[in-house]
Image 1 (cartoon, rainbow over the protein chains, first blue to last red):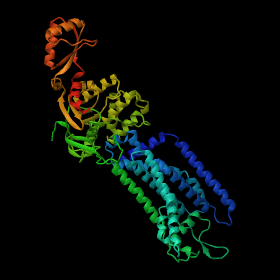
Image 2 (tube, one colour; image 1 turned 30 degrees about the vertical axis):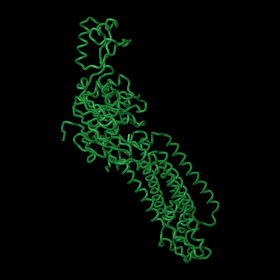
Image 3 (cartoon, each protein chain N blue to C red; image 1 turned 45 degrees about the vertical axis):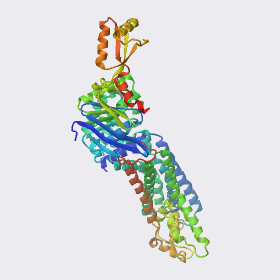
Image 4 (cartoon, rainbow over the protein chains, first blue to last red; image 1 turned 135 degrees about the vertical axis):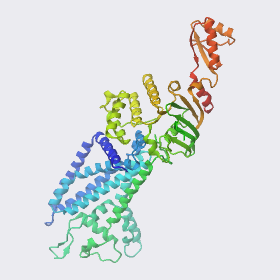
Length: 317
Length: 307
């Protein structure tokens, strides 16, 4: 890998994407959707507040989960055709015959696609900044944004790997969406069904055996990795309780509860040990990063030439 | 090994699944000459080009491009090899200059050399006035010239051109011919595959026939003419006088038509004797030449059994 090679491919891809047009419209509608969602959620939360909790906390949590959902929907489309599409257009082979290394090409294409996703994420920054003034800690905002950025990179990398493995761009796009579906929706479905199967035998629920099925879920990773907010005193009972009305914190506590062995008391005071408990997100994030890294390694191998084996149905040029 | 040869391939085999694309092909391409790779569709020409261009590994056999093994040192080969594929895409969104500059950088030319080479290629491909136009406005011939220019950016010593003349109008073909002759004169080893045999006869110094993944014959173009007898065609202003003269010569009985009389197969010396006899007999000959060209008849003879 060479810095200049990566930069050359990155700039080339970026230039092509910018000139392929309509990105202004895409980015504009993206920003509009994010702000409409934020505005509506703010109105709902401001009306519905039952106490003086800062509105920024549920607003931020809701916004980030929504943005994560949106980027998962968009990211596969960014890179799922970047290698086999070049092959179909007949521009890949001439690139491979230059002095650019396979790693230059793969990393350059990944960074180009990833940066498109990051630009989309960046358009949500003003909304995020607003929630920070409304009670979200800077640490939580930064960590959450970094995790979303990493997950965008993972989806881009997996899609890029699929586009290198499969000859047809339509198949790689479809499978990229299948991957997003599998981690986004398949993982909780699998967990729910497995949990139900285990629970049919009389006895305690054994979610602790299948909790890992939830780990790859991007929403779980996002929520569980968000630094917890300081507990507060319940004005009615006088006990310390976790920050209420916190979607990220609540989802994180839920998935950590699932890990606990049977017979564990699930009551509010115990939940205060949340930060020291067994987090789920390291496994989930590691899984996702490993998928992305593996896809990049495969993509690089596929671009290595002279090629000994070709994927079925592939022509070099 | 083989210091005078830009390309040496010996016993190169390559299969795709159960399809044997190359079954022991042999080929040499000397520096300073244009070597033509000729054969029917599916004979393995493109597969061989891909192996020489370091994109495909051979299953067996020995390959040297510029003296370097493309399997063990593909980068070394790429530095000194220019390749223009059969079917290629250009980056439609780029201007001509941007396209050339991108590849100049991909070949790691420094800034000064990039500027010099891009200017030279623009002039050589007569695309100066299109320099800042988008690539997609170019005509087919212009795109072909741009692709050829791209392959020559890094001043390669070995040039591989896969069907460079396909889709070109006669004018562009003449330009291509002159361009390739110019490269050879500058000492480059040029390997060009084509179906257009009449053109190759003028472009190439050497012809390598391939058929069903094997070398069917390797000839100097000059030798090809006398490799085997071939039919000749003669036309005169007075067909009747021509017929009489032919009967006198002992080869009568051929029916003349609009384009003349087709004579039985002869070698060049025999044909020259006949022409001299016809002229001295007072026949006003206006056309006399091999039917279809040497290359075509050699091609048909060498590859005919494959159809």
